[in-house]
Amino acid sequence: MVTSLEIYVIYFNPEDYPGKYVVRRQIASNKGVLTDRKCTLHTTLKEARSAIPITKTNIKRMPEDVACIVETWI
Image (tube, rainbow, N blue to C red; front, side, top):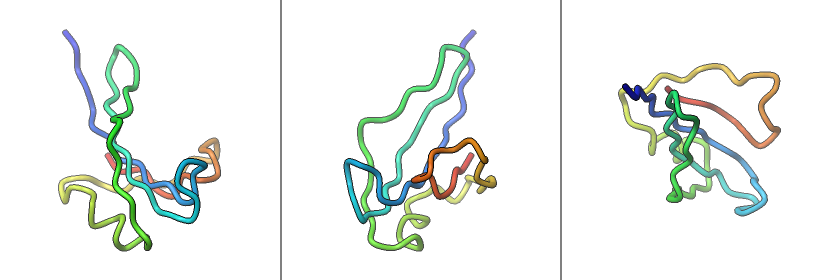
């Protein structure tokens, strides 16, 4: 049985979109983590947060996260 968890990650200034906030959806399962090819681009953190489903909860940034990760939502 495959179980999965939908995760949204907000990045700022990633290499592929410098100067932008980027929201990417990931699906974590017992088979690994799959990142959706689609993403949304924003000019402010407030705009990026508005792209996150209201059912998601913001978890604190982890020390081992790459520098461009701003927030993770599960």
